[in-house]
Image 1: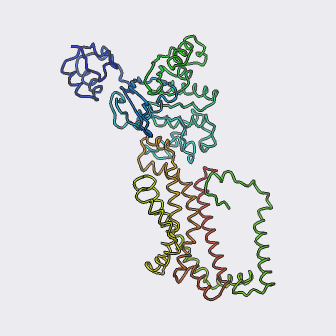
Image 2 (image 1 turned 30 degrees about the horizontal axis):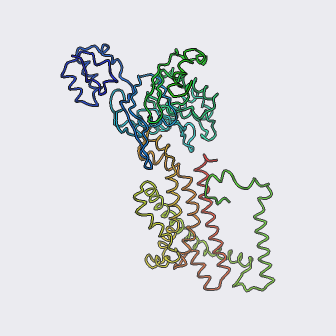
Length: 310
Length: 266
């Protein structure tokens, strides 16, 4: 008997529809509602069905299903996001690009639990989690370093909030400073750092959340072109080493292609996924790849889906 | 000395750095002033009960220092001032925090808090002395009352001024309420709070003296009002001098605390 109801939204799980599966199991799973995916996994592996044949080899690290968000301000209704569906596989580097006002930051605020969606659901490791805060290393647009704390004391904030004693946290963070080029600035206050160094400090703070999913909101947006390129390569190096799942918001098409495994293009308000593009470049990335013909081709495809005349 | 409210101004002083010798200018001014004063008294034959000469004031100062009168009164006033400051600070910061965090509390209390500032403290000081006696407690209360408002306003401004995105960052890191309070709100609002405390420090001295004028048997204010009754004008000068010194010392202490706590601003 083919499974027809195994995903809440059939369009996001097309492979499962043709799979053999006991009838009562499907009904059971449909009743289970939002716990569907978790149950699916457990129930099936208890039975005789080969997981590979069903096509759910790995549960997405992060999944958004038909998420919508509308804001009401001063009598105006702003539809920020409409029916966003996205799945990020473990270890993937997904870049999200969209015109300003396409709800990119709203997307992150929803994922981190700072906001709740009006409809749709957000799944972490296949489970709808009510408390999403604390599951991610979230780096907001501004570096948001606390001006009264030294660089070292700024980056240990995530550890400190988890109850790790300051001295232990400092020791742990100090070992990471060289990798971020901050070893000479441990005791400096943020005000005395350059923009690039502040971003690196903010990124180290994000890494020290010790979460395997990083949400980076235009981290290099405010930097000059040279510093930005330098940090892109440095970030890639870091990612090759740690292989966290990364969702990276940017408004720079070149940056989106150069960094990402896939690029999600958001449409102007109300934001929805207008295009999803698998980047046709090998890893590790090298600067010279920008000159490859497929880079140019995908660049114009992205620009087109952003509504730019090419 | 810097009396500016806003901290940012401290970084950019209006005056350029002065040459070294100009440090002595205020002292030179003082000496010139004292000489002029002494000359005026000697040449114009003004009676000592109207304007004592600086020499006479100096002699009186030595007198009250040596017989312990000044110390006795100063300690009483200082205790009232410090007590008033502590009480006013505590109530104002706690209430200010609640007001800053809750619009409901603010709506309920704001009109009365503003109205309370319209009552001249001089007018209710005698009432408080009647209610709470002529001892130190009524002065502590009056001093606390006068200190209360500026600290309250600055607490509210400080807490409300904490950027929303810093709150979001802390929340995304799953900080508890207490962690947000102690690691974000307190340090972030400290500059504004300390500016309020600076104003409060000088006001608290005024509060204590007003209270002592309304009825007391010890303290610099009561020493002045007693000397007034005896036409001992030199002693009144000594009292005023001691009060000014006290206010300056308190202001200096807060400035020192500020420098230490806000080192990151330099």
